[in-house]
Image (cartoon, rainbow, N blue to C red; front, side, top):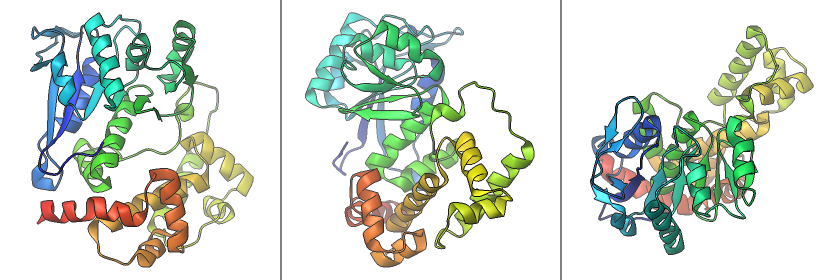
Length: 330
């Protein structure tokens, strides 16, 4: 979602009766608050609906659109909130407008049950998608053409993003900011929302199943993660982290994945990528030094992980975000 620096990124919130007030609030909090005084790029968030009349929401609330669907032709990103009733039919004009937007190449993101809206439009046919873990079977049954994934917090397939339930919508919105505007902008927004700039793992960690864990084990795992974060530049192994937690390597790995939804080494790579992003945005350190401080050991290894996880190189990432951040903080 490349946006010329001379204008704000244009975000369209698509509203129709039945969309969730919580998701509307998340979208508004991420893109509708002016944080330019803290170095976050300006956003132009518009509430878009078929008609200019107020859109009723649950709980006696309503949302007043400030643009009609025609504005979607100007949007850099379209975000569809989840639904109170997950099979709420979207108005025909909304579905048609979403189809046209996707055909134009505009990125579209759906939060939680918003995946049902995209499925109604046929945009998820033959593509992977995710929704709240408790709705996966319903989405599969109603839209068998969709490859419904169960565990991911959010997914990207052919310029379409879908996310799991409730808080995962925040994860996706921050990820979209991080992708387009950089890790520092996403982290600043996350801090103002008092939430993590990103969560690792999958929604497997939240699915209801009988896996009781002692508080002692949870504390030990948290201590091991905290230690790794304070010493990212040091080499870490599962055995070494397990020893700090007072567990065998096998037990540590099993309980770590049950708690976080990912493996210790995948979690560590994610943390190192995030640390490298901040160093690339905030400093002029040479790339080998960035790699060392983030714990990659070498620039080559860091470059490989950036290519795999961010689809870019450290050098290109710095070119995209370092100067912008310096200018806006200056």
